[in-house]
Image (tube, rainbow, N blue to C red):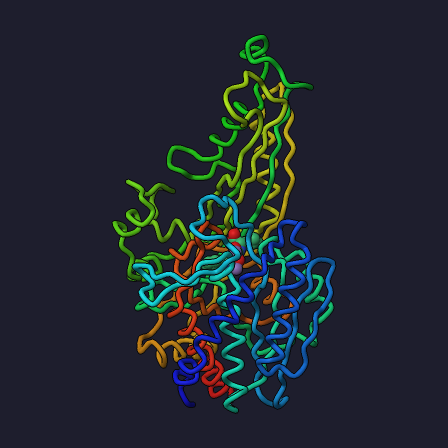
Length: 462
Ligand code: BES
Ligand code: MN
Ligand code: MN
């Protein structure tokens, strides 16, 4: 097949401007105040799929935000690739830490992105990466090189747990039938170290509430004599890890698949520089579960983290008070074969047991998801490998990621489909953080590499 290079070069500015238009829409799925914007983003994606050459496009209503569906079926006997991505984004807060407004995209050069990067919420996660697929589709249809059937499924609730996806899959098995699912919603090791994501962690996300007295109390009159829910919550949270940073929930590790020595040795071959890692984060030391390396801690090991904690007086100055309630949001990243519903129950039981007399505890589960691992000897993995070899001139390294895309395990369960995770973002792109950005080089390299996957996957399916 012809390289997409010259087409991309000629259309580069338009490709960037179209993405910038999409990035201007604050499609924050978590915040009901932005409902209209989320819908507006879905409509723009629909229009752009149409322009890119999809023949049949629709906005599918769900109990939550709509799913944009588009397809081009050229021959029933050819394989079908289903592209999944999301048009919703994380809330941009804290706003004061952004160097430019999150929904007014700007292009700036950075050390890691000498050709410039687009700074905006969603630039990397996932509008920029999703839009690479729309532009790759445009290239293939406009140059008559689409080698197989394509279906697009772009959702608007990924950042809030994809609650409607199970519902949608159950009702649309036929429509979504495919030979492989292609997703760009992860990362790669470095611009000169291409990698394919071969694993995602599962998730259990809960909120906890500790309640003490029936009203806020003067901390002089009552302090020391009754339980302070905030003190108690801090103690309970501290008790969730032991001195080796192992998680103390009984049964938590029971189903964890331990990697063999050989697998761990293989993993350690991937380039990783602890000094650069610490420097980039401005930390003196790393911290984590004893007996595991940094890369193991953030991919093949389960973790428990408090994502937010609040209660009591947090306003200006000092107020002497013992609040009635304290809260925290806690996430547990899970690995094969932990069952997130079971882990949520184990957490709840253990957390309740940690509460002293004098307080009550409520645990509310939010959402969850199952971990995923792909084999690297499958036809689809080899097709992806060849695609990277064609555009990077290097064999990509398989890498298990610490992030979660719960829908990937669901796709396998509901549609019996395998997913290929071709991520082009970098860990330093600050997804979910202030100043999220996506390298222009990465964006264009993705557009160039995706058609190669289509080509090799179709060839190898014959
Ligand atoms: N795209 C990310 C997940 C990701 C990022 C995986 C980088 C691997 C590498 C996705 O949008 C995300 O943020 N997922 C959430 C979970 C979801 C249920 C809210 C996550 O991982 O926190
Ligand atoms: Mn994402
Ligand atoms: Mn995300």
